[in-house]
Amino acid sequence: MSESETTISSYTRDERESDERTEESESVRVCPECGGSVVADEEHGETVCTDCGLVLEEDAIDRGPEWRSFDREGESKSRVGAPTTKMMHDNGLSTNIGWQNKDAYGNTLSAERRQQMQRLRTWHERFRTRDSKERNLKQALGEIDRMASALGLPENVRETASVIYRRALSEDLLPGRSIEGVASASLYAAARQANTPRSLDELTAVSRVDRMELTRTYRYIVRELKLEVAPADPAQYLARFASELGLSDEGEWRARGLLKTAEEAGVTSGKSPVGLAAAAVYAASLLTNEALTQSQVSDVAGVSEVTIRNRYKELLDAAETAEGTPGAGDRSPAGA
DNA sequence: ACACGTAGAGAACTGGT
DNA sequence: ACCAGCACTCTACGTGT
Image 1 (cartoon, rainbow, N blue to C red):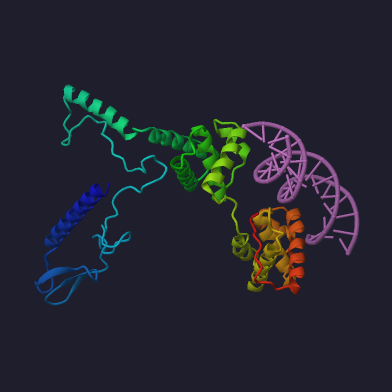
Image 2: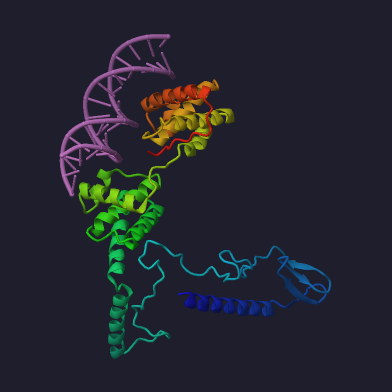
């Protein structure tokens, strides 16, 4: 793969350099003022006369190649080519034999040649998706794409689901499980990781597997792949909520402290992170006399007022009990 | 208007068998 | 592997300040 890559890119570079040379030689003109020779100063984006210094054109656009390499040092500066994607079983890097039945010069092929090409296409396709894992992957990614479309999930979720599925495949989690089941579970996990969760019911509505198999498979792959679902840290919501509600820096700081003490007191386990963040913001607004209402916070955070009510008292209680014991050494596990 | 509490329903996870 | 129970959240409603 890397061989063909370097071949292609070096070709591209040569071609571009020769293009530049032609442009340069064509752009030699004569100065209308003094009759001297005119050159393009590409560094400054100007076309100037070398004799009298008259500027004929300025702010020229440099259409040449970039001189920096944005990927790896010393490699091609070319940006040509489609992006690779995990959504295709071969990362979108495969080649295909064209369908037009024309040769490289655009001439139509003879009947004999056409038959030959057709056979080649068939075999090429067979080799491309040769072993069972590749075929498996091809089918699964198709499923993921179909379900994601039906659920209106964005592309990054599909990418994530594809990656999860690939990991499941490479860790041999597939035997004994259906492709559709693992594909559905991957998508479910991906949607949750991307903070655009879909409920199990929504997923089973578009999936070919029933709800039980989905939950079973989902739990299995989460455990085996040690996936981090559930956005672990409530604090990551704080900044957004605080700015949308116009909470002061002081308030945001106190909210962060409330979450920290609550976590150390072990009262956050099992609670929804969004609810905790919302409650922390509300509680902090009370402490700093900023008078945010529960419904304001509820609107921005997307959790009910009831949840805020239930949580914010716990947060304040935890903060009070922690008042006397500023134990920094104690670190209780938040997850369990 | 806002804060607060409660009841009933539903969804997702956990543990027992 | 399956099922029942559980803790949590939501909606809806009523009450108090």
